[in-house]
Length: 338
Image: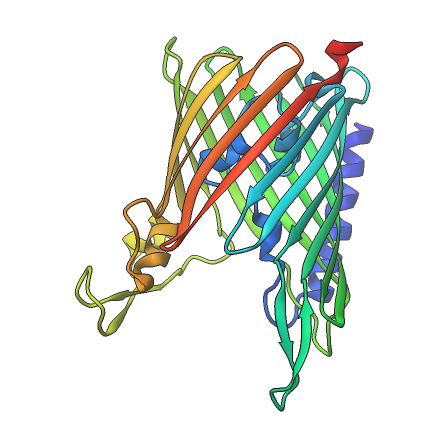
């Protein structure tokens, strides 16, 4: 159980950093932007999805294994406004019961005009966030797998810069006879090593639970992801009269708090070479109540195709009333080429 001891020590180390550095305001929400089209189409977060996809290491490090040996993937997302998000990863087996992945993520927010406090312009600058990450997973039994994903984060906003260290710890239980997958992930444990100014910013630490289940012998499956479990109350504002501008009302009750923690998804996968998925994120939809949400707000969808050496995936979501996001994955199975 050497691998289990390594994961346990990493958890203790990450928890120490978390307690030391988490003072001040929350930051680094870009860490939750997925690079996996499959996960993006299933609501933006899915920690129980079973697929031999190297990009799932970001969702849950326990989702990768020897089956992703010598896989490479690149991702591109057209994000809000002029922001662009890109990622690349490479995975390989680590013995018969383990796997490791190395990856990089890059987010560029486009050109932004800078000004002095007196209003005089200082020119344009391009804020960026960069994440270097490494993942390791290990099979404890034929059904239970654990993993850790360590992330080194750099942010540069004009003359300000910061460094952070974060880690994800995950467990997955998969019963292939029942097509049942259960997962738990502790995400973004850690904190800043170098702050922007005088205060340390918090990372978006989260505890997530995931469930995916096939429906009999059919090609359909469904799932539920519970997220933001470190905070029960998630109030939101909406207009007093639905569909009209006006006074905003604060909404917070047991039902809305419950469903704002849940993402519901469904998948059609007739073979390992093709899938279509769709999901509904109630939190995203209600967040847009303040901005007179679009009909598609909260929904996401995606599809993917695989051949022997190559795969492509495309996913779409509308996380804002006036902006949509499109994520593209291209994968290459280098092992099949050799």
